[in-house]
Image 1 (cartoon, rainbow, N blue to C red):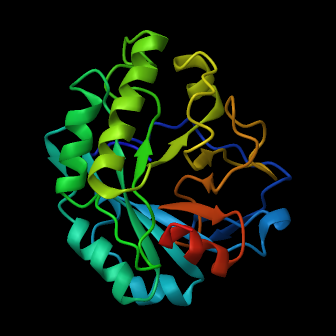
Image 2 (cartoon, rainbow, N blue to C red):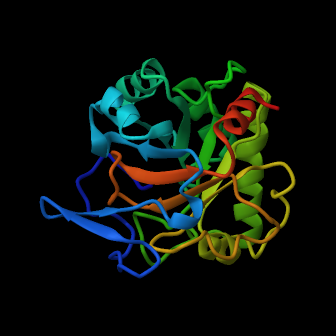
Length: 252
């Protein structure tokens, strides 16, 4: 995941192909396969304005069972393709949810949460709407400040403020999307969120999600490829059966 309203390159480093994740050359594009160890789990993807208008029936036919759609960033940005992506995935029969790209140095967690919920980040217990998600990763605007220039205490306070407001407005705690490196570096190995926040771990070109951020003993979603797969956007897995994901969406 990354900011999506400018044509800048992806924030991630260049992907290195390993024996753990196969790749297929198709029309000059490398397509990452689902890691064999997780092939039985429901597959999905996350999209932003980079993907523009998504062909959702084709994504469903291609194996997608769920999708996360970028809704907002900070308190000023809204994905101009959000309605097509969020409602289109729903009409195609996918479970879908919305995510917010955090910029903790711009405004408070509470303010960004309110902006997010107001513009797509709400939740309903219909069994088809995934809980809101918070995307925490490197500062895309200043590579020298991976942690947005904030102390670890301020970072964890910001996350708590965002989470509390999302819960107040929607009834659900947000799923936390992050990498182990970012989390442990920027929160100081905080264990304060693992008990009541589902983890969406990002780790690419590997046979598994690897060591998890401090406090978590399991993951709920794994983003295993950032843009090189068969589905539009980033490739993801759910850690369980489709029925279990539906119960998770419903709030069970």
